[in-house]
Image: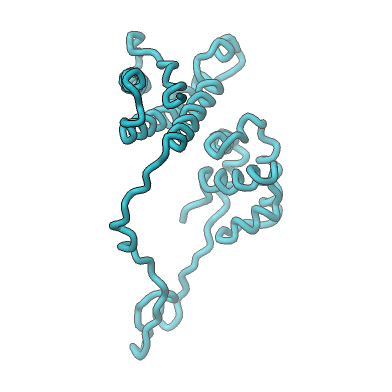
Length: 236
């Protein structure tokens, strides 16, 4: 049986923070109705999330990162189990289409029509929407780099152990975000001018080298650096 994950909790918490600035145990209780969790744990969750630094409350990804790094929150999450919605009575699975013990009736439940809308044309994004999505992904990468990357501040701080987590954070967040950025811009390549297409190619080369370096014992310094110009793509 799975426990409550950081991803699920961060999404719920972010919804509350986005509109109210913080969350309450009452709010969590309403949103975690499908989970077995007592009021004391709800109060602890709300308190610990509200006490996180503001830098982690800029979006759900940052919040998820903070929750993953907080061992006390992880300990609480490991003890929260989902409720079961399957009950057995007279060999009948409630909500299913299985016959009961006598075979005299069948219980039906609504089912999702997975074919509905299958032939609908894909939604086309505007230049503004693509730019917003691009900026979001780049902002997430920048935040992870600032928190854990080899910045002058982090490398000069002899008390920090962020360098030990950098490779893991880069692989878990920056590498997949880079792939999303490339996929997004290639899908809407017609929105890019000639210079921006060159920048995209530079970013692709950097992304491949960056990914390779995360799995190497000795990193290759000759791989292309991050092209800062990617931040201004679609900006005109």
